[in-house]
Image (cartoon, rainbow, N blue to C red; front, side, top):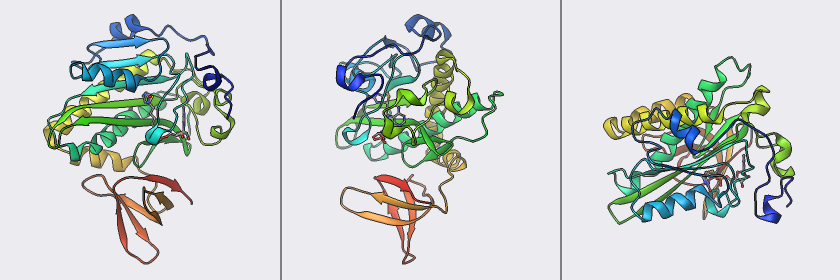
Length: 287
Ligand code: BT5
């Protein structure tokens, strides 16, 4: 598969769009958070912000430490998949958290991040953008706009049996990317805020709002548990009633998506009427 901006073949970033300044100083000067982004490491070109954050965390980086990049040469999705990360246009960030929660509850942080991301996108769309569609969450880790993927979240964990050492929340958001910057096979399934609104968005403003929303939801999650996150997540869930196919490691399930349960697991009603709980997997929306 080839990519117009050539990151696959050359393994380096090509500047695509001249954009507003996006660097460590600009980001730090605008931070309004109490701990997210403190400290912050900025790279104009890196393999993966998640890989960098993981190494920092192994070396003792404190909670809230963030890595931001202008471009990634090996942006990671789940299960070894690739995250397209052209230069100068989007958000690629990884946040180190050290929550005192059982490792089994870590997947809830993916849904928590999804709420923070979708709220942030919503903030920018409601700002007179003229965008007709509302952003929606797709279980477990996607944000869709106009039914196309605009953001993905990769949560990685380092833990003992009963204790989380750290979590890396990796977030990619397509802001000012145009469709021709993507490989052909992704152009019909991915989008950006610019594609949907015709307008450029300041990456500094977006990142700041995103960090504030992550901080707000993280504090709320630790104080009040998962229920508020779960409720907020459901308000952005528009898959209910749709036919879905789920590819899990060892099984294929087809049914009607219903909702998520109190643990953030997806509930699907199979043809037989049986309700199946999905803990992990990839969801394909059929209708
Ligand atoms: C994800 O994986 O959606 C998680 C993406 C996380 C990316 C961030 S960027 C900052 C941090 N550092 C990293 O290295 N990663 C994180 P998954 O659900 O597996 O989706 C991957 C699939 O999304 C690919 O196989 C493509 O089909 C599609 N895709 C790839 N790049 C995309 C893009 N820029 N926009 C929309 N879809 C994309």
